[in-house]
Image 1 (cartoon, rainbow, N blue to C red):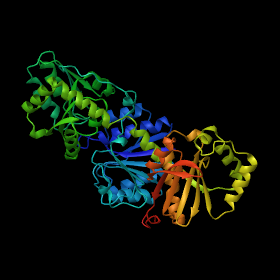
Image 2 (image 1 turned 90 degrees about the vertical axis):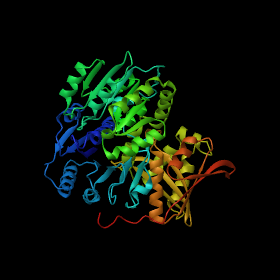
Image 3 (image 1 turned 180 degrees about the horizontal axis):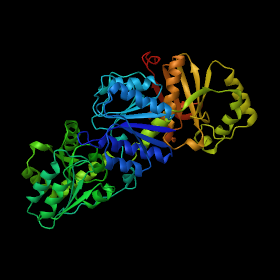
Image 4 (image 1 turned 135 degrees about the vertical axis):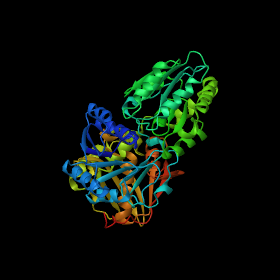
Length: 507
């Protein structure tokens, strides 16, 4: 399987789009699979980082119009037999998505504020606090939305920091400054000016300078001549280490804010682009960060004042740490990738040759333990049961298969009018990986579309919390405990919408 990533970086665009796609690519590589970056811009330091990670880079001509850009990207994806195309950038439109889909490709569109007029992507990812379905009213019926901070894409270097416990000193003394990969307006210089106004002893300052920052020499000069101890770090690859070292940070808005929240590092935010404002304001409202405003409107003295207050406000810093770490974990990439993988699974109707496979799945000790009847099933009884279901109009059984058409599970429905009762079994190799809710969703959409089933019921042992959660994530609502064949059962219901229509002819 291959993943094609279409994203750009430059001094004006910044590096955030590519860097969060890097997080996704790193997760894809763990599977392990192959991710390829397609870019129109050239940023040598960033590209060196991607190549060091083992990713290929394809360059498109700079002069391409968006339509031709989309066609060339899609053609490359088809040529390389890619399973998914990921597109990340504010300059990619509805038309760009439509062209990718016209090539028969699966598309993940990473978005921050609903900037496109229409969404044709298979999945739209918005990892922001204010992400809401209302931003995507104009979307295709098949478009799935992944919304909120549970899907925040953190790079691999942060994964090992899960469970990190920050100790906030009574008086802070270690300050980190990171204003993004480009910082074309040199907001870093103003921050340094502000820190130089502090009349505090024993301060240590580390300033991170991105690879696309054009002001390195000026920053180097001011740091060398400053009475305040300032160390410049360029092209940093161990940001978690610096964030763990620091007591607080002055930062730009954008994706770095999620990394800081995960590391529990109290932050003062300046925004360098308008699209960072909503995130910074919301984080301030939640007590995760202190938002000062647009960098050009904030004086060096105001930066100094905010930092001086935070240096001595230990209780505030402790609360910022707690709230940030409650907001972000390091599982976002895995969650997104599971959705991408799940879209590659398919359903086929059960056939006579599946009889033994279903018997083996049903007699798996873990399956029997969560069944209402825990006794092993005799082969003769299973054959009789299987044949009766195969010949009946009141039952339908799907086999879930992977991209290579290998069976990974079973979904069974008992039909009565416009309603159905669902049961699901997953091969042990695919359990406990988060696929359950995706498989349930896949089956629910299929049964709704093919048979116009409007209500699906699930009956689950109350002690089977994993299964109850999987059904809940797939749109089922728990309505309480009921009796099923003499056993107590949690009763969950999913109400389907009217049948999903076929793809728009334009796709």
